[in-house]
Length: 208
Length: 139
Image (cartoon, rainbow over all chains, first blue to last red; front, side, top):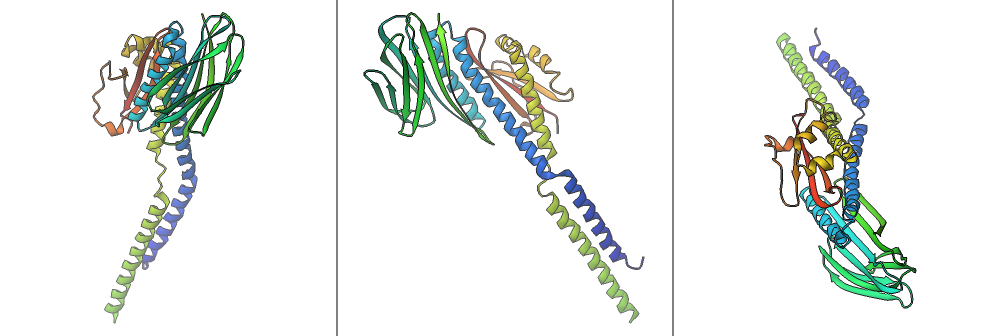
């Protein structure tokens, strides 16, 4: 053991080789990637939970159609509050229409809920003859807007929802004489820690 | 002369040892600066397990009913198969403003997982609730 120092050096080199082999074996990027993917899955699951319960809000309010939109507004508020507590953001735009059980020309009520975290200049346009337009400028966050359009039962319409000249969505509204219909259009966004999730969809219900 | 050689050898020995230590130190720091964080991996796995438990109970309709009845014991019992036996966990139900069942006293909030599930109400009436599972004791 004359060259004790060199023994240290050789041992260190062997140890380093072993560590490198271990490091490659563990495959760190894969572990980190998998953890991130699982985190994303968890956020996505929560997003699906929110979307499902928003739809559920309408279904459980089925026998009180007058409360449907109001309950969606309340559940949207509830969700946003819970998300804020977790430092996540929730953005939600909801448009509903309800046609009465009647025939001929009647009123269709339309409601818009703004939970987009920003004020919007809203424009609603219903096609037909004549085209009807409603403007509601500076619709603040946490607010809802109610209006009505003339419709002829049995005619199908396209309701265009626009705001801030950058957003346009087209909602198909089918009407039938003596059948009351409720239509809900959802635009939901969850800004999570890992990713942003977004979903837009429409649900149609025939009321009794 | 002999003493001088011995002194030189001693110095060399110290230098070689020092270089070895330094090499090891740098390689360990370099290789493991982004540690694989297995605890993180475990944490997210527990969160998913707990969430899936709630999801399955919701799909079978049991969660909605138990939440409606504020029956924490039933929810906890039904979650047992989903959360490994060695974990500590508790369930609390919240309404729009506050908790309506007792909250667990958490010794170390930093190492507690919080898994949330929202419910709009029961079968035919609106009654928003948040079910939270607190999981701890896995470190």
